[in-house]
Amino acid sequence: MSKPTLETVQNVAILGATGTIGIQTLDVISQHPERFKVFALTANNNVKSMFSLCSEHSPRYAVMLQPQAAAELGAQLKAAQSSTIVLHGEQALIDVAAHAEVDTVMAAIVGAAGLHPAMAAAKAGKRILLANKETLVMAGSLFMRAVEESGATLLPIDSEHNAIFQVMPHQRAKSLAEAGIKRVLLTASGGPFRNATLDDMRSVTRAQALNHPNWVMGPKITIDSATMMNKGLEVIEAHWLFNAAANQIDVVVHPQSVIHSMVEYNDGSVLAQLGNPDMRTPIAYGLGFPDRLQSGVNSLDLIKIGRLDFCAPDFSRFPCLRLAYDALNAGGTAPAILNAANEIAVEAFLAERIGFMDIPLMIESVLTASVIEDVVSIEQLATVDAKARRAASLWLENHA
Image (cartoon, rainbow, N blue to C red; front, side):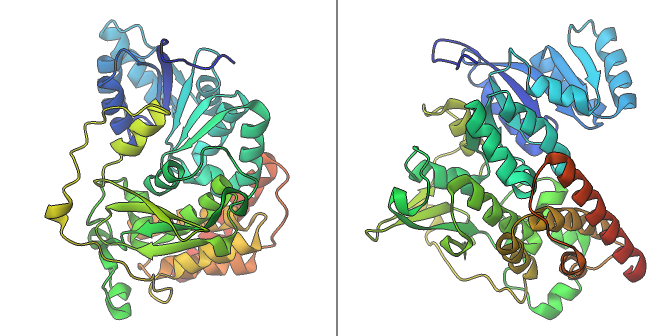
């Protein structure tokens, strides 16, 4: 596949266009019409938002996962005399992600649903801006192999991994030691319950958990941030992205969310990437790499911030982080099981069927009862994922 150059306009497919990352990606793209064209937008079933986005950005394709949503969107676009072609279903997601005319794929579908289209983009050798955690958590070995074999370009968009990428050598090394690196340090805001007592956390409400102090995100990832499972998933991602062992990945709680992550080198140097907590910074970095693009983000005012604080995470109050390290150390299908159980647990909490501290209890129960296998295929992972979800749902029936 020919790589885009500075003189060509990049065709971009945005998987998960109506989510926070999708909207912010479109905001950055709109600032650089000479460099980017929206080729395809995808969503689950948010017809209203997709109609608005299609009207503004005129993609060639719009894909809705749900057929009824696709029918509604198609009718509305036809009435508006739009030339956008509406498709539906998972295969359509895969098709646009791997389309021959697509240069860059923003993989921002939340959850396991984003795995197959991201994998298709990797196998097709695309420039992949990866904002979907589950792709690496569930299928890290398979995904990284596909990237290597196809010659795809992988750029992490999570603010933490993007920060690490920015301060690491860009030649992929066989190990951190080969790159002269001692460890990577993932910063965590600590979420809304950073200073809460264990008793306080047992009575956390849905509204409290959704009130993140620094970041504006979707509900699932906001709850993951509150439990620190988000950081646990990022630890697993960092393992695959940077060839880092679990004991080379540390988490540091940093309430201001100004330092997005750090890398410690063997000579004692610690390099950090700083910026306002705005996802348009890593998105712009991924879109423009190796160039730096205007993102629309305000300048960082360190004088106004005044101080930067750090502390160690408390595994007793945030057991989800410990469970993620446990899954990484167990290897094989353990991270996929962890992810599936967590998705069911978060759904149950958002539906107010379980309490906040029941989330790690459900996940640990499913992990403990599961048989861990070596990862051999996407089909196997789909089976493992379904089985873990059934186990989590059974736990829910017995405890809700």
